[in-house]
Image (tube, rainbow, N blue to C red):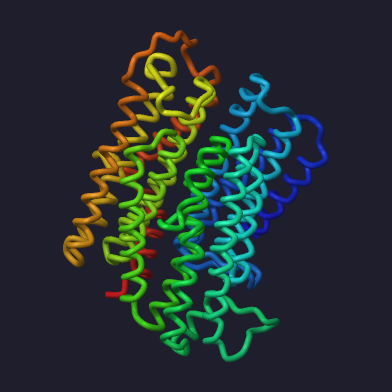
Amino acid sequence: MSLFLIISLLIISVIGILITKKRSIIESLSLLVSGITCIVSFLIAYKVSSVGTVTFFTFFSLDALGAIVLMIIGSIGFATTIYSIAYLREETKKHIIGFTRVKQYFILLQLFLFAMYLAITAGSPIFAWIAIEATTLSTAFLISFYDKPSAIEGAWKYLIINSVGLLLGFFGTLLYFTSVSSLGEGGFVSWQTLRENASHLDPLIAKIAFVFVLIGYGTKVGFAPMHTWKPDAYSKAPAPLGALLSGALLPVAFFILLKFKTITDLSIGYSFSQTLFFIFGLFSIAVASLIMFNARNYKRLLAYSSIENAGIIALGFGFGGLGVFGAVLHLLYHSAVKVIMFFSAGNILLKYHSAKIQNIKNAFHIIPTTSILFVLGFLIVTGTPPFGIFFSKIYILGTGIKTHPVVALIAILFMTMVFVGFLRHITQMFLSRSTEEKESGEGNIWLVIPPLFFLFLIVLLSFYIPPFLTKLIHTVTLYYTYD
């Protein structure tokens, strides 16, 4: 019933925003719904930690990893709504957008959240695919939000690459269905049905199917070389959307990919999927590290960071054991830190009216709170102690050194390059001087409260993880560890 409440609230929110003509009502309705869904998502996750996998109306189910991702969507969705209200008000003051655009934004935002909730709770891979495709359609319009030629180009690139990728993923999904001798009741084939019939799946078909699924959903995750949509989409979309694309959509796509990995591993063993995770993981880290050196746009810089971290998470699930434990922690920490960094990037954009790194000068003096948040975000996302990502990387790479030392050492080399490349741009943005005079301060306190809260959350989770969350993480670790 809790899931039904989330879905109902989101639908009501969209309808309410469509019919109202007052901005304050749109903002209040969006804030109320996102706040309630955030609370409910945590209640559902707590229930999953207590009773295990929860099933709703046959067509929906939620396991431990799904519960973790549900909390990520709920918390980031709520924070994004709060930040979006303040951010869009500032853009309205600057005559960048009007009421119609604000209304469109909140409708598409609610549809995006709705699609992600459906994707992780769908009991069938077909329903999950439909929901993921819905995230593509809703976010494509948000990427082209400002109607600039470059934004429209980025939206089309995003739409085409992701749609083609998901089409390949759909083909791979159908190949998995060959293991089922007869369709379930009403033609419904669930994830559980595919797992139960994994032993009947032809080994060659299993390999081909997983390759298609990995390419399809890996496009949504942002693995290299399917990553090419990310820099354009992240740089052209409104800043609040970047937090959801990187912090929430990436875990959702990864979650579905891991469900297929489990079925494949039950059919042919884990070495095949492990090898592919190593290949795509290392390649993603390498590509991100090399491109980041020459990045000219700080929002694109964050896109390359997401590509790198997707690769790190893939390595963690590939290594198994404590690597999986580290990968789940990394997923949590990465989602939280990207909220800090994208919201901070939005504040920088509002102040400087430019996303180019070379145009950001003397930021520590002009927007001190935002500057501190962005720099701390850099230290967190690159794994600087004592923040949580340092420990998650230790778990992942420590496991890799024991089991696959060559893979782990190559990853460490490129991750070091990421730190150096990132530091180069951070120095230029925040330590360089400028003679240009700008008014000091962020202007609106609600532009800094959401990222400050997530900074507090990361610090807290770096040293203390609530018992129910610990139980969920351990459940996921056991589920995805095979030896």
